[in-house]
Image (tube, rainbow, N blue to C red; front, side):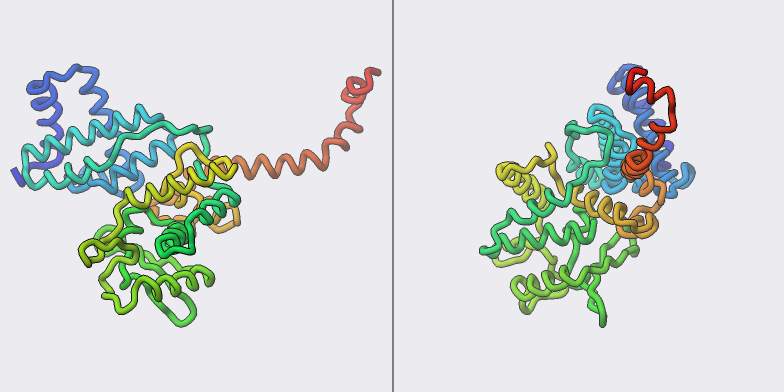
Length: 338
């Protein structure tokens, strides 16, 4: 069973498992095939994983989550389509777990990805305005220890632009202090990692946080933690998501309109969008976000490019339309009914 190729798994899954055992309809089988083929194409185009080199380990939580976010934010697909793709991938991984016990861990990891819901969208990448971001950061009560921790979590989420799983895995040993700067090491797959330099003001926040929360700490301790039975444990993703969600709700109560569904990934998008609109090259943003393919980064900001172009055209139009009007006899006749 261990020597079984991913393609043998796929063949048996569709023909024996779905077709014979589950007696799935042709429509369901076709939809699931399309979902898995689309995932394979995504791995090929954005993860440099050719069809021939595909392994079952490529059907992991990180790849699947990135795939679903890509479909939602770049391709603009609805939640119903995302949930179909997710259901197909979950079903296949569960089958693999039934066939090979070593695959059960993959299914358990995958089951933590919840169904998508449709937020209000207009085709643009969801991000926060400067006013919204400042208000969000101002919600935690910094007169309390918990509030100071929560505010610094928001600052670091924004500053690093990290995915939530990578953010939560940051340890004290990942704080790299050099002569003129402080960097945060974000770990990727295998031995891959990237260092994100912190701004001077963020460095000051970090040093204050370390003095309060990490006196005489082990370098292997998580940067952000909760204490249970005297032991420090990494925060859960639910804790961070609830922090952003509840803070956004509190911000709404102060009269500032916030996105319908505010979440940690939106902080990542906001950071990247702010850098883009400030003129930071896409290659630098790609490095910050950890995108393997720059086409993912460029597609991410397609609508921002259109917005920037529209704003530029509006400025040109505003400065020249009167001149054009005076040079156009027909327009003059229409305007003055000559």
